[in-house]
Length: 207
Image 1: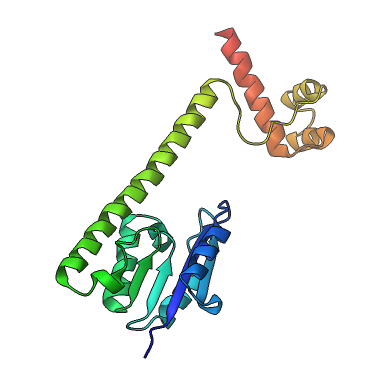
Image 2 (image 1 turned 60 degrees about the vertical axis):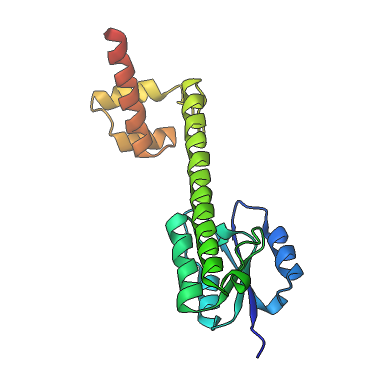
């Protein structure tokens, strides 16, 4: 009985590699109706299509992915999924970007299995350290930009000209902060934050 060939794709909302992965899987070839794809945001790693694929995967079947990092977010997760597929499901994995990671060939003898497992661990580690390095560079870039005065996020709403007059009334208890905010057409929290920031600025000048 011929093994069933499945393909798996994972793309984040920021990635543009969906078509490249699809072309690679079709070229293997993986039947169109056997390709499973999850689209994920950076924070969400709930993979319904991957879980559905695992339920269908049987002994001797073949799972094809374009690159090893499609199996997980980090070193530990990639190794864990590899073990589930090859040891528990007893299915084969083909990683298109790395011919050594093809258990149809390497799984035939002990040496081949050892080589595949060793290469997998090295690649998983490299993939994780590269992601951590990119994140570190991003954080360093943001810190450097902040030191240069670059502001991130939405620009602050300009303080209206009549804010100081309303603030003075509020300080004299002539009006409430809610009334002052309504006059300025802003949220009460915004009025209180402006008042607090202005007070801190005045205190710093006095020092």
